[in-house]
Amino acid sequence: MLHTVNKSPFDKNSLENCLRFARKGHSILLFEDGIYGALKGTRFETLIAEGLKSSTIYVLVPDLEARGMRMDNVIDGVKATDYAGFVDLSAENKTVQAWL
Image (cartoon, rainbow, N blue to C red; front, side, top):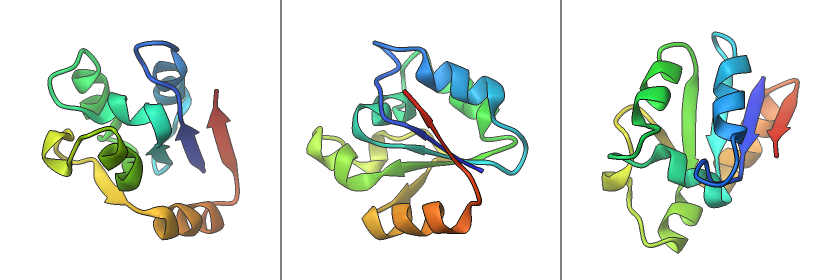
């Protein structure tokens, strides 16, 4: 299953809910304002580190860059992807769960 989070974890609890319900082997894609959950030095760093133990977490690089960030700002273990990768993740997973 692919979980997508596009809301800032500072405004909504979508990321926390996603990580609570994601299961081993699931993929999680942070895009739009959801990318803020992948940044080093935030209160979500521990939560993401725990999620990485069972899920693959991706960040959409164009959205990261549009907000003035680079992969250097992203928590170790979070993978970079682009729009083509987003499409691939959607096609590879039988189900896509959007966390709004």
